[in-house]
Length: 462
Image 1: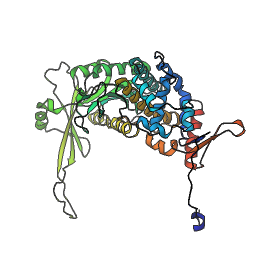
Image 2 (image 1 turned 180 degrees about the vertical axis):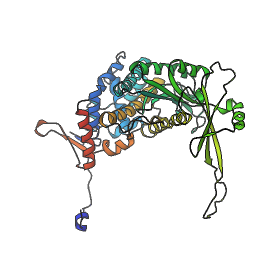
Image 3 (image 1 turned 90 degrees about the vertical axis):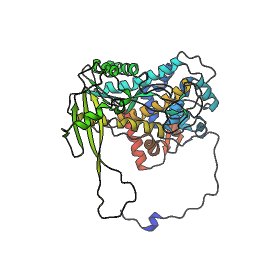
Image 4 (image 1 turned 120 degrees about the horizontal axis):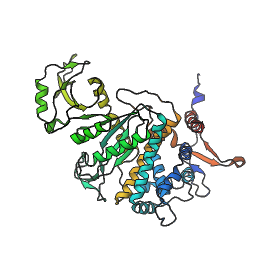
């Protein structure tokens, strides 16, 4: 369609006055929460959160499950610190979603977090796992891929259960170092094992991994294959034997620094098998001397990469590159070809993307309380916000992928921050024309299409 300049440009008068309504406020800056309201109803989220605190005696009028729900919404809206709640304390859509006429103050939120009991945290963890288990049961997958790794959460202060340990970004700072289990197919966090920042990656890993696998297996079909990927920090005979005995297909990086003899094996080998322009491999007839296990495969991988050019770069028409090789050794009990093993193992990078999104867009690295239980509740709120965003998309959109060699997620997920900009952060007003509660938003077609799609799909029969 062709437009004239007069159709596009228009003179507007300057806005000379700003006024704010404080009474009978029916405006909302977050109208897109209407979609999450529908999702919460389908999941019976409020009632199930309340059941997690059934043994907690309520002090005052604010109940613990209301604070937990508020924290989930707080994170969905994109806020970080607890005191940021003052910027949406009067928002009508937030109040409606919480079922509250008055939002709690920051001191009340902090007090409730500090009073949270260990049983409450465990109940919340189990509820979070149940949401993921319900999704996996509905999908009826042939394979479920479990990724295990830790991520440092800096406290920047003294907090219960924290300690000074390895901290790449903030050296010398106190921190927590939780171990996470993420499901590759759904991109969700299944569970975490909370730890102080001064422990090794493998601390408590064997028991945690076994419990997670048993819970996953109990909810799946008997023939479903469970796979696992881990880095070199978890390298141990006991752990891989446990995985193998529990019928888990695994790959694991081998730490070169612990086994100097690996370097000689690789240097002496001259029969590399090439399977593309960059990669070659061979299978090692080797295992650590102290290991009892003998039937696992050690696959050496060689990748050709360009050397970094140091010094001034001449602006010639042609700059020749020198090449070098990078090596890795993968331990596995898989029986597939080496290139398939490598691609499967390299798919671990998707977990790093989940951690990145959780920290940058779901505020996972924020530590709000001096108590360990309070900080675990906030961490759980970030995981709930992430998992619920993925659950919303899985309920309303078609699966875009089948099982790939790298076990990419079965949906092309939008990040929380993207949904926030596209849908959640939209102004609206709640009115009651003819007695019908109505949310009115600006008539942007893209927003209308997105919101209506979510609401329509959530209302459709499963």
